[in-house]
Amino acid sequence: MDLEKININKDPVIIFMGTPEFSVPVLEGLIKNYQVRAIITQPDKKVGRKGEIKPTPVKEVALKHNILCLQPNKIREALQEINQLEPDLIITCAYGQILPLDLLVIPRLGCINVHASLLPKLRGGAPIHHAIMDGEVETGITIMYMAEGMDSGDIISQKAIPITSDETASSLHDKLKILGRDLLLETLPSILNGTNKRIKQDEAKVTYGFNITREDEKINFNDTKRNIVNKVRGLNSWPGAYCLFEDKVLKVWACRRTNNVFDNLRDGTITNIYQDGFGVKVSNGEVVFTEVQLAGKSKIKAVDFANGHNLIGKVLK
Image (cartoon, rainbow, N blue to C red):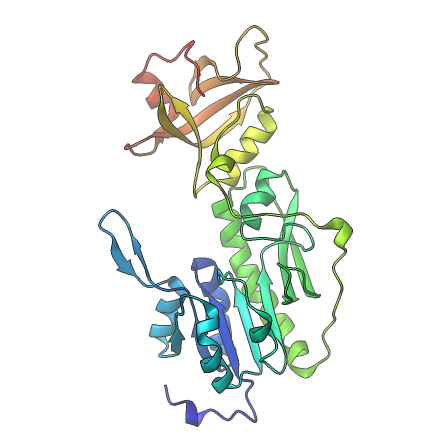
C-alpha cells in the first residue's frame, strides 16, 4: 500500500487494533468507509494438534486489503512506529493487551474502544460469556474513550440488545460483532468532528467480566439449576462447561431445567434417562444434559451417551 497517496488533510489517519473474529466486522466496516493507515494485532500462534502457525483473523483482513500490519509481542515495542504514522485516531476492539499511557496520548482525537457490554457493567476480557453466566437479560456495545484503568474511560455511545432464554455465548458473540460495527460507524462522525458525548462511568455500578478460568468452567452441582444452565449457555461454544464422569472430563454443551425434586439424592447424582438426555440432581432440583462430549471424543446427543453407559445412580463431580 502506498501511504504517500493518502491525503491526510482530508482523511483521518486511523490505526486499528484487534485480534479475534469478533474484531473482523468492525475492521471491515472501517476499511469500507475510512482510510485505515495500519493494523496492529497479536503475534501469530500455533493452533490445532499439528501446531500450525496461523495468522490472527484481523491479520488475514490486513493481508487481504494490503494494509500495513504490525504484530509486536508487547505493544510498547511498536510505540515508535505508531508515532511515525501520526494517527488522528486509534480504534481498538478485542486487541488483547492493555494500552499504556504513552500510547493513549499519541493520537490527536484519542483512543476509542468497541467493548461488548453496557459499561460500567462487565468490564474485562470476557463480557459476552459473563453476561449469560450472570443471568443478565440484556447486554450491548459501548463505544468509549480508553483510559489507564481497565475499560474505565468515558462512554461515547451505547446500544442494547436482549439476551434470549436460549442464547449462547456463540450466538450472542455473532450478534454483538455486527452491532459493534454498526454502532462504531454511526458514532465515528461525531468523534471526528468533535461533537460526540463524553459520559463518566458510574463507579458504584461497576461489575467485571474477567477472562474465563478453568475454575469458571467447572459445574458445581451444589449450585441452582438456573445458574448451571446459564453457565452451560455462557460457555458454549468456547471453552465449554465441564464436570467429571468416572474421573474423565465430560463437557456439557447444552442442558435444560425440569421441575423435579430429589431431596434424598446427593447433588450430582444421575436421576433419569429422558428422550433428549439424562437428568442430574442439583441443589434445588434437576437439570437435563442434552449434548455432551467425553474427553477425546466428539460431541454427541446426551441420550446417545446414556445408551452407551449405565448411568442411573452414578455421581458426576
